Image (cartoon, rainbow, N blue to C red):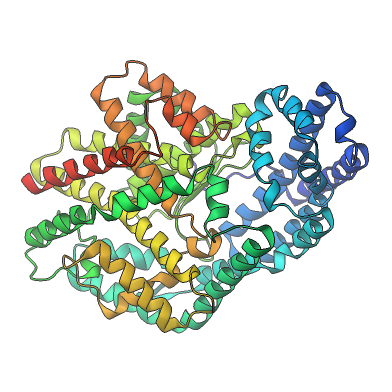
Length: 573
């Protein structure tokens, strides 16, 4: 029997151990500053490499403490004060490290290039750091911004999380969480779906003034950040983090919006199969196969392990560790964070997966998705802490790829009725990570383009105008739907994050098509090597290993053609 709750002891045995480790890391950070500040230009090549290693080690120690505190908070929002305490202590230590990146970018080009050439695993990190120079401020200002960080955007993120984790929805005589109420949108009972949508909206509407205010503060904070750091647009910082160009993102959005008719065709066919005159927004996830049989976690575990074993022994062995060694917190509970994620932790520990498993078949694919993340994060440990942080655009590749593997496995021996249901569910998952995320991105563009704060009415109007593009006349959006922007956490935690899902979805569909074609005989090994690179190379360079160019609009059409094939198959069943 696998464990269903996190074992945090690989991070720290207890809070006392964390406190001691944080003291040591803080002391090491201070020593690092005394040893190297204003001396980088005097270092030999080997001394500079040792300097980077020390910087990495201290940064990793601080990240380990932050991981422990955040995971405690994710399990129980009452731990917010503990998270704040650890965050503040970590930020105090980080101020002694701030000089390093700033001072590196003050070195003359010849010295920088010499250090980079000799840096081995740190070369891409240092090359990326060079590109940050136009957006860096002087040390004094950077220290002030670091000090104030916890009462800026991150404070509103915490408020958002704590608020939602305590929010309850009165449904059928029970008070349930956000994740649980949203799960009823997948019910086979149309009345139950509509009732769940009504209950969710009724409660959400009570909190809209606060949620709108939080979004406006995030918007204002990003605007100020862009002004003081010399970014031309609100999304430029995200593209820089993702190591990709505006051109590539624009090509993705343009190609995707031009293919919205694929979604319209699918929803028209689904409406016909369900026998409805009109398909409403609460019908989007209605199952075609009326099966309320619980889909247990153990069943999902078995399917995921079998699927991964057939693809790669490496994938299978990592997944086994995850199931057996307390990497996963499985079930919903009071004050636990909603949704799902895989936290990378640090390269000397292991990832941690959070689920809110509600015994439905779609939970199988969520498990596969997060396990893919964990496998990717675990493999990228080899390149070290500074290079393991994967850009969002490639961070979603393993997660979506694992979903596709499980989907393929589930389809193999299914009868016609089940195959149609599985195919429908997978298409809807793809729409959620492709079309919906592009909708989210264009909505964010519209919001952040406004100079002033937005009223709730303006938020609602922008949300509906962007959403209607994806659905056209195939889905009727009810008045409820206009306020559903206000529960999307990515708008708060990571502005302009969402296009990365679409980026990865189309990239994976292209890669998965290549894998299934058998044209690349060593695909599995090449793919594992691709994942193990973490963030040590640019996405453009990594994807080029498979013969693709992410800046060519034709590349995105490869993935979109795969989506069309799946919808055509669904229509013909």
